[in-house]
Length: 234
Image (cartoon, rainbow, N blue to C red):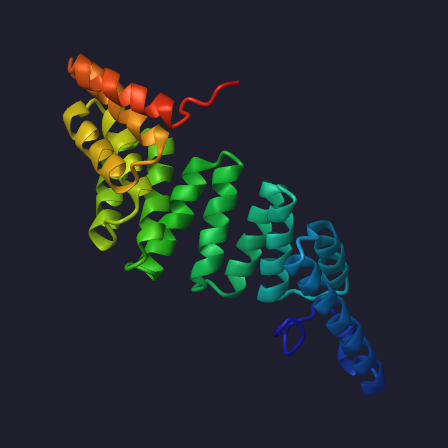
């Protein structure tokens, strides 16, 4: 797993330890790490965090430890701590794409949209053919009201994979927010065409049509959305 090995421990005094003691330490750490992995796989994030924190207190400072501790914190919705651990992991292995993605998602969840742009921007450079990465970057730009950049990046995602209706809906929201209502309506129409059973997409198209003065079409789309259960009744 790489969490114990050359350079993994910051405890220099252990360098002259008895090999039998070192083996015992290794077994304890290995058992704790395996327990943490099982806890993560079964959704017991509190147990995973507890085990991984114990390993960290033993002086282990590795990519794996920080990455999995970040995942444990994320599972507990402790987003700032998760971000801090992912950052430590990336200092150990800066080319790991999935940790950049996890960092960006944790920053979004903690309300750090600017930090999310930085993380997803790095992710896109590492995996330029990943449409999801570009969507995540585009939506982070949207959260900062940087609509022109958001639309550009979301269009790049659609050029890679035009199939997901969600991508078209996100493009529509960005274009609508920037006042490009005609293009927004066309994007929402693509979303509705690709996923006709989604009431949100029909509702969004209806709102765009309403702003364009196409009242009859707007009413039809809003009725369709209501028939599909959107907006949901409280």
